[in-house]
Image (cartoon, rainbow, N blue to C red):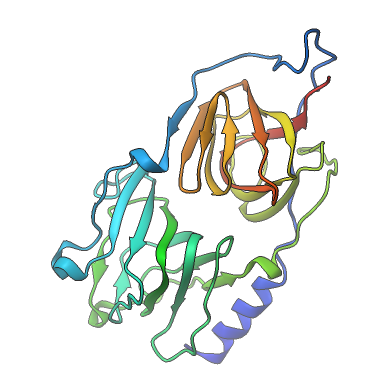
Amino acid sequence: MPPTTRLTRRALRSSLALGLLWCGACAGPQTGGPAVAGPQTPLHVLRATQVRWDKLNAARGDKSPKAATLWGDRHGKVATGFLLSTVDGFKSPPHIHNVSYRAVVLQGRFHNDDPNAEPMWMGPGSFWTQPKGAVHITAAKGQHTLAYVEIESGPYLVRPVDQRFVSGEAPVNVAPLNLVWLDAQSSRWLQASGGAQIAHLWGAPNDGQRHGSFVRLPAGFDGQVRTHGASWQAVVVRGPVVVGTGSLPPGSFVRAAGQSVHRLRCGTQGGCVLYVRAEGRFGVETLAR
């Protein structure tokens, strides 16, 4: 990898500071204990234990990592999110992809870089991007390695290194210690309450615009997520998280569309983390008691 690219990566690791959340007018006090107030739309929930696994790269046979689609279709032309699982000690040969992707480490440790780079192992809660056309390897350690991968358009294909090309994008590797967590703050667009924090990762949190963030909930958080945009969807990074009435372990997926309000709880001692992909505004707020 050219030295300028590696410098760009390091600069990007330390500059992810624009984390924000939004909520509309918070619900007033409720009678009979905490209650979600606002429009309700159906939640689409897929637990990690319910996903269907197949081979990510069938050409590699038994050496292929496994993949499980959470939303979209990685074989089609649409935006897609899927889980990636490998055996302990997995290491891919050098290769490229025809599309760029983002990834979040859920379990185990992953290394993703150019073939000559020194190992840089990323644990749970890490985030990385892989530009299309760039030669790289991916490796994993751990008895239960699991990552979430998303693309903006498909299909997601693995290609040999002789088909490399320059996209103009720079890769990013972000360890949890490099994240900048922002407490409840207000802006024209976003706000949070109840100890929820956010680390903004990509995109613009404006009406009609896609963006992605980590949302961290403190242990014992009992509140709601209020959506105002076209869609809100999340993958559990650290949990379990209770969304609606379901307790969701890491790797689980939940989606809501349009304007809606849904219960959101975290009872885990170490707190909970969600990777949220949204279009437009959303908010996280505590419930009045």
